[in-house]
Image (cartoon, rainbow, N blue to C red; front, side, top):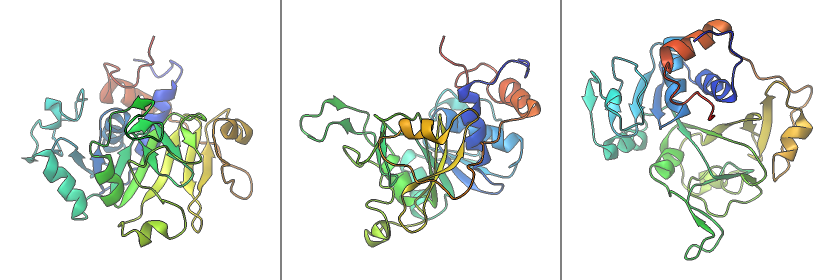
Length: 261
């Protein structure tokens, strides 16, 4: 596929996520765009990262795009294949540098909900997929990065249910609760990239994607976004060379980077 074709939002997300990965890191990978991003990172700026797939596959040799974390390509020539519980144990023992999670709802302190819509646990408006490994990842990996779409129904002042603890109530509340490591360090959405203000732990604009203004980002949020001092940087776009690798080597069948027709 030619890089002359206009970049779509999913390709932009994959590139931004890939840029969060640094060389020599051990990365915990879930299904979807994080798989695309990790393979892209390994083929470009981070050739020495180690893959830990949620289902237990460890660092497969051939980086063909799996259909999920349970796909056979996550095990292809892996040096070791373990059960899912052991991949979570790797996080518990401090062996995972970064993990990626999606969300149905997220709040200003980076607490995420994938359990339910509505606050009544016994009678929710909508029952979602639940935790899976989300709580393990958010509680145990060194650095957590969230990935998802941004709108006022997803970006809430308070989530209906905390599946994945972020900074809880802000400040030192995560540390006081006994949770380890650095907690959420970034939220990557269809509008921009966010981090967390160091003292209050409130979500803060880091960069905004091309064409997205601070006002537009705020309209897509149900709580007040913290703005940094000075001009807000524009999120870096992938080069034509990166798009060629993404489209022709990473996900040539467009499993995860093709927009729904």
